[in-house]
Length: 302
Image 1 (cartoon, rainbow, N blue to C red):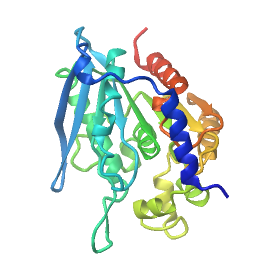
Image 2 (image 1 turned 135 degrees about the vertical axis):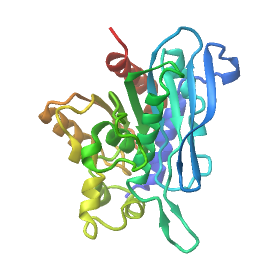
Image 3 (image 1 turned 60 degrees about the vertical axis):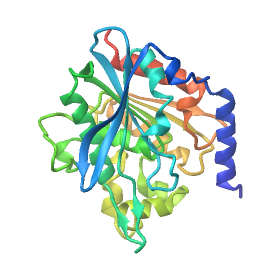
């Protein structure tokens, strides 16, 4: 059996070869940057976000919320700052681009797990509500918000698009009169049925930490955390980008979402990256083109 991490590494090499060139932000005079804005407090943790917006024009502009991946604090460089060079590309295309903090699972020295589901989802919902509440200040159209993520970030993007107050996943401190829904979702390699992903993927330990056990031990939590369970006709449009050789989040996760959304009458587009595995296709030339065409279609006014 192939080593899954080798497959992932090779996919990363492929993406590096086709990635678009990046220009340092200091040279991009057409982008306005506002960083380290606090949007919520969780215990002793202050959650922040960064914004890149078009320098010209009064707006309001559609906004895209970028959600970082990973469920656990394993990579010290993996935070919202890892999206530093992704935001200006969206801003130059006429979007207010936002990278947000969210709580990740932390294993303490006593081997206790903190911040289990739905903590991370609640953070994303609070960020969306904060953006709507401050829409005029940051030249955002509150009726045209999108969410984009890779892997677990995509999982959260799907959930924030598909769930509402009646699903019981809202933060208790939020003003529920302000919607946390988004109008378009880009799902890059995200899990959609967490029990199936546990059975067939390479993230068993992370899912057990996230949900407090195996699918057999806590089946209701796996169901509650699975975007597939929230497919409805009124879901926002979703673009899914997935490698058909993904060994961490199986390609079947994307296929199941595609089939169920289409059966429900919801708008879903599946872009298959053939021969590739689990990687962030936000930086892949083919996928990047499709992503912005999708976002332009659903978030920009005719």
